Image: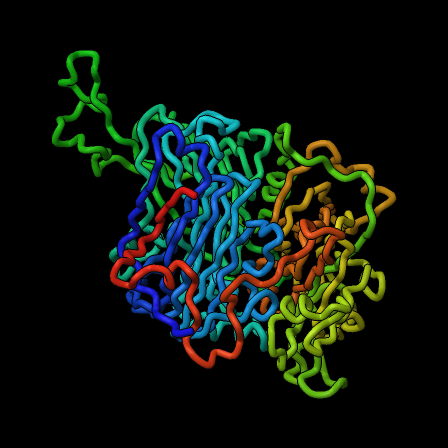
Length: 639
């Protein structure tokens, strides 16, 4: 079949096709976007940097859908890199094919090729996000996904906000991100970003030859309520977010509603999302919005981090009490024009200490699920239990014997239960496809899978600080292995996992993300997990439900989930250096006994790895004359 290239995306304009004003809220729709991945030059800190982005913007386009809608995202790869897009937190029910992990669920989209992702967004409301799942490119290839209730925002379980605003925290890198990934895979953890960003802007703490960088500005009206959809897209850092003079009411996390929780700081680890209400109830003025990366305290190796800040700026309203002639600020209408005068001094918040990890521990520990009629109950019976120690180790560059402890003969890797993930070099097809067509339900395509052990090979004091640096305490635990690590689960099995952070060669926290499933976060603690003591602390009534769970520094977290979504699902740390260095495993959920509990075949025109010619395009383009196609981001069509 002859292929055709997709037309380039034009400006992000939403077009709504409707049958009637009353039918729209109840009708599901197909929402279509075109993502053109290309490289553009962006200038920050007096330097022009070539950046890989979607549709020429950073962050990329926001996808807005209503619960129950379907998405069709046409990805046009005009970059020099292989690309896949992962829809972070979207459960992809019976649709593992659209999960977007290279050579696990799909072949990558090669340069000058196209591919269309199609999936439903059902049974979820709130904030998720999308990002590249190739090397470190998610640092610039990312954007928000907003899922609204089926019958309108009036059905939020909290006061309807005046506005909803994505707040995406990230990094600015002057180095090539593909090279960054190669450095990580070679065991180097010494690269660092050059700045932090809020919605792609560096803010006035950074400057170029004395001229400050632009910062993100949120204009607010006194008395109005704003819903901030906070996303951490950074490669390295957990962020503390504060707005001077204001408090947050946290109402959701990872597209799951929580019992409203009032705080002056929101803490978001890489991969996590938090929805928080902010009421503009401070005296009119300007208030700094500060995003501060956390940093692990010594003796961990120092990683340079950067604070950034934007601005919350009050609009000055007319005083209607005397005919509108006088402004509430007492200034003229010429000074009004929506913003405070320039002589107003912005107010800065008091931030936590950069080594403060307990603020994050308590923030995450205070989250509980909001009771709703359709909320699933925590399964009481557990079928499988895993204890997964997260740490670092080394493998020999050549052979099985070498000098370690920082020697050039060995490479530092990240591990789960002393095994570091490695995708086979000579895999001809994605593992999901190989497994689907292997009727024995064993490893397909000649790939040997290494079973993730129930627990680490030996017990030790997982949080002994003496093991953070090279030395005699960690040396016996340092040798590890690389393999294609996987764990199979019977369909419908309830799985309990205790993630234990360790002090092996570093003591950082670990934001663990499971594709295709949400997990109940039963409990967290500091130090070594002790089942005899800690099971009694489990919250089996209203635990928070997450797709990314932060394992505390030198601590643990216990989660439980039902393996009811067949496919091969990535489970990994969302710190990019941990991911690139191997802190990953495949969770393989087997088919259930019925058609409705089994993975369907790959979709028509699924991406293949031969790439003999340009890709066959989806039926939307085959059935539409090219001259009639005006493909614009956010096109919404009723079914």
